[in-house]
Length: 157
Length: 157
DNA sequence: CTCGTTGCAAATCATTTGCAATGGA
DNA sequence: TCCATTGCAAATGATTTGCAACGAG
Image 1 (cartoon, rainbow over the protein chains, first blue to last red):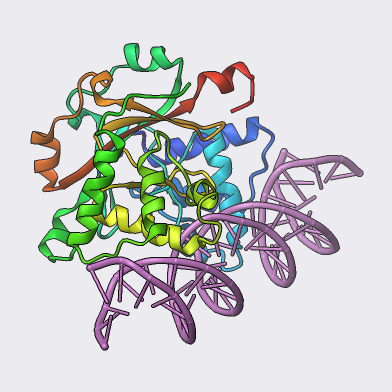
Image 2 (image 1 turned 60 degrees about the vertical axis):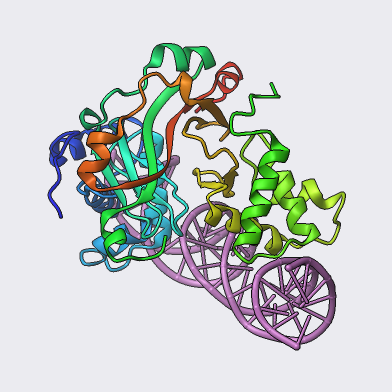
């Protein structure tokens, strides 16, 4: 149920790249910010800000929620994160910036990543995007439905 | 900039179908609820609850926000609406329940519908969904980026 | 008559913001 | 030193909920 493929890059490599990018933009590298970046980029799921907060609370008991929000939004601005906002209660952030597919369960709000290779026949840029003169940044094919687990638990959708 | 194709069905036809469905499930048909349903299904965009509220304020000055939320969620439960929750401030509801594509502008949060025919090569069910044992309800291919208008306004993304 | 629906008001709660203090560069 | 960042607390604001009155079936 864990250890998915690290499609984008080895975590530490990516952490370094982000640190580099932060420096270049005049951002400062505080221990908190580093911990948040490391925790976030290391995840294979779609954590909420609060989840990241809890994750680093062990090392930094004093981090404030606002700090986590600030940092995550900075990452979004850098293009190193995507704010996935499902109908779920909290905002979810996705460290996976590759084109991929989301399977979103209507019952439990779980989000399952599927790499693009498994999405046979992705949409082509040529027609769709040029026609609308739209500059794509990230494509996330969202498929809403009910996941296997929820169906087996015969939870009413 | 308007009058897109009514892919799903003529509005009045669909309104009747929804009324039917509401009745069958033991729901009652109040004037307010009817107005909300009519207003919502008639739209070609992705209104917020507040937008619907304003739209019907002319006929029903006394409708409460909670009533609109209740009704929209009822429609979602019926499968006659989808809650599209972008990173935008408010929740957006989509009356288009056909498989389609969303072009979401990162600058102005606009959502542009594109019918499936224009999305050459849609994802196939067979592999992806069966592999994950996922029961699809609606596929919305979300492409985030910057729309033509925002790029011309050289608004920084 | 029953019970789903309404409207108002109050409650909720994730997220944002103001501001003084801190400490990287 | 300078100014981005932090943390706390207060503010924000969309959405939800409690409850009494209403009214469709």
